[in-house]
Image (tube, rainbow, N blue to C red; front, side):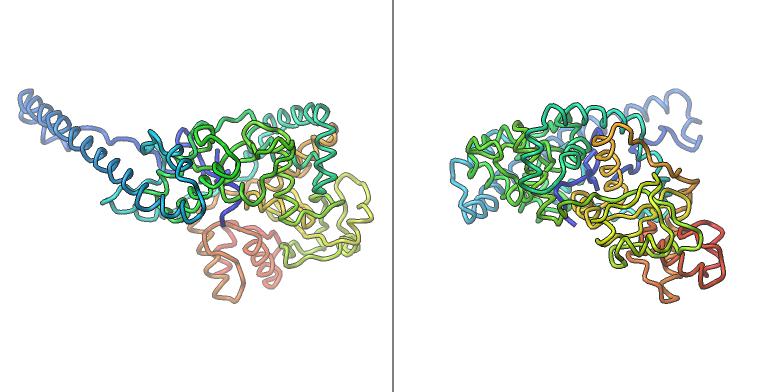
Length: 458
């Protein structure tokens, strides 16, 4: 899914993620020099000759590599003219905008996921053996508290702006601030790359060339329509731009000129950046007058295998089952009448929530349950200084191998359960399938994979 932005990791590793989503990956350490011991038997002379031979090979290889890069750079310049320009012209991009965008632009060889012409794309890395980690570190309390403090200060400073934005789009100021804070630390996070260079490099020789070509054309349209100097358009390594971290296609759909200066500037104009975030959320289904959700207690008598937007019920029915807000407050009347969904990201081993459709609007910004929970919790803290971390503690989870979880998913599928994507990651469909299996088998419901359960599912 192509979200607002592309989350991932910078080459100096967040997009990120923003890209996310993309965390981690294998390190690229050189193997130790030397052999199996037999090479040493020739003494110092043999080792010296071998060393000189290696150095000579490296020295000879360097000019060839430089020549190869120079040839690829030439191909890149020809590609800009033969491929990009016709597409740009078709989309009403003036020639002067095109020339300004690529004047002096060369390939950025430091970007990840590049496949130079003539090279084969890397084989898809099998991640099935990697462990998935506990959610606990994601909710770093020190970072969350610092963002919340800054967010409350900005809420006071920008109160009039946030009120106008909420009146226009129906999205509360604390939600807008929380997204802004999570994405770029309220605009402080740098996007150091020239967007045109990033997008052109990736459109020319990445593993997703077609996607980035569309984004490159969108960036050219932005420069032309909004009279933005292309050199001023900065992005992350994946092309996500400005304070909201919009991809160019999202900019064209959702970015707005809220300060009415005649141009849309999500890099330097705070009103434009924040209103663009709110406009995005509104168009993705944010329901005016409702929050994102609340932490709850779920009695043991209530099945935890009821997660997901496809199992929404009026909140009043969840309350009737014995589910209560963890803070002891009653649900708001608007929430009691509206739909709510159970959310237990760690099954019975972590915090539990009743979320509203707005939770899934937050996921449109970054398709991750934990991301939406993070933004929701940060928004609560910005709105209320007394709000803090989730009361429920994350249990000792996330230590199974992905291959083991994938085996469990495959076994559940054979038994007729819908686990969603069979990928070794326990999404809500996998969690509730585990809970349904546990209930059917007379086991204690946990709604989360563990090593002892694997053999039982088989």
